[in-house]
Amino acid sequence: MSARGQIERLAVAPSRTKLALFKQPNFRRFFAGYATSLFGTGMAPVAVSFAVLNGGGSASQLGFVLTAVVTTTIVGLLVGGVLADRFGRRRLMLGSDLLRCVAQGTFAALVIVGHAPLWSLIGVIAVSGLGSGLFSPALTALTREIVSEGEVHDANALIGLARNVGSVGGPAVAGGLVAVTNAGVVVAADAFTFAVSVVSLAMLELDRGHEGRVSSILDDLREGWDAWRSRSWILITDIKFALSNAIVLSPWFVLGPAIAKRHLGGASAWGLVLTAQGAGAIVAGLALVGRRPGRPLVLATVVQAAWALPLIGLALIMPAWAIAVGAFAAGIGSAVFVAIWTTTLQRNVPHAVLARVSSYDSLTAFALGPIGLALAGPIAARVGDATLLWIGAGWQLLSTLFVLALPQIRRFHDPPRPAFKTS
Image (cartoon, rainbow, N blue to C red; front, side, top):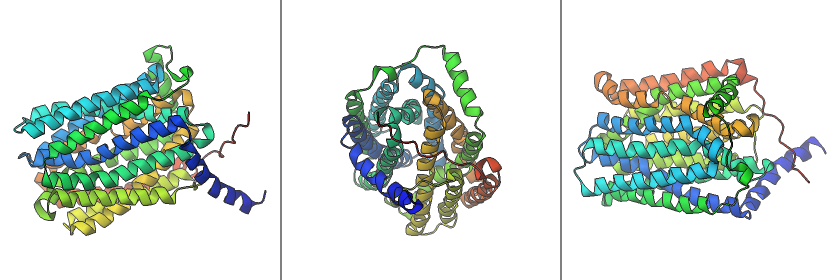
């Protein structure tokens, strides 16, 4: 076949495969439930942020709430990979979604009743964070159980598209509902979406061979650790992401809602910004259909620099629409990174340890998140919101250039696409 013919085949085949995936009962059931829960997840940040702020909380107190979520998420990530590989990915995801359904429902009740002490909100949201941490490593591995090897890339693209649609529609709906009703109502809707996901996961029909393993937990942890640390390209990317979480994303999530409340018009304005971020992610997802870069880590690193734009917009207190433009670019960067990174992990890490490597990957990437979230408010109070946001923007640009200079990233090539099995 000519080079042009190979390019045309790669460009067309994935689209047909994506459509065919919905004919498979397992993928169809999983996708319906997970896409529903993703929409609820998209609503949650706006609802939780304004549940705290509208209840009289400060930016620093919001930081404490978000710190609780990230801290327990990290705890879940630490053990989630081992539990997923040991007892079965689907089982762990069922338990995780049940936990989040109950936690979000309790949070909603506390907000709706009113006058809930901050410690109670922190405690409940911490339980929800634990569920999220347990769920994440299992998801990466489950995808390879419900679709064939050659369809993993397309399944990731569809899952990513659902995630991005939720990140667009969720904040938009949440911003409107918070403005006319109560933040607790929105959190209650999020709890319901996890119940839908539980039903869809329970309906999956999986090979018993995927439902667990017998070994020492310490051996499982050690095996996953060795697989993770032996790949320098994972270490480099995770360390960069961990620092960016503390220096870039923490000020964004803590100061963003507070600045929107003071200067931009409140929840509806912040919902617009987050919606724009999600819209950028959808555009990127559609553009990635049928395309796989030869040097995935180079592209995944470059696109993260876009996060400097919305931070600059917040630092200058630009109009909401201008900040939304920057958030749109950041959404493109996030979607490209997640799609490329997930597929790169799945194609370069053995399936037997994939959930554990994914666990260490996420654990490292988010390890500094609680520190950043807890300190963003107090540091901003001392040096000023604008100064902290400018530091974040500068870090994102300089760290991108530094990582691109490393040969482990610059010279990394993805292995060839696996051939479809015919027997």
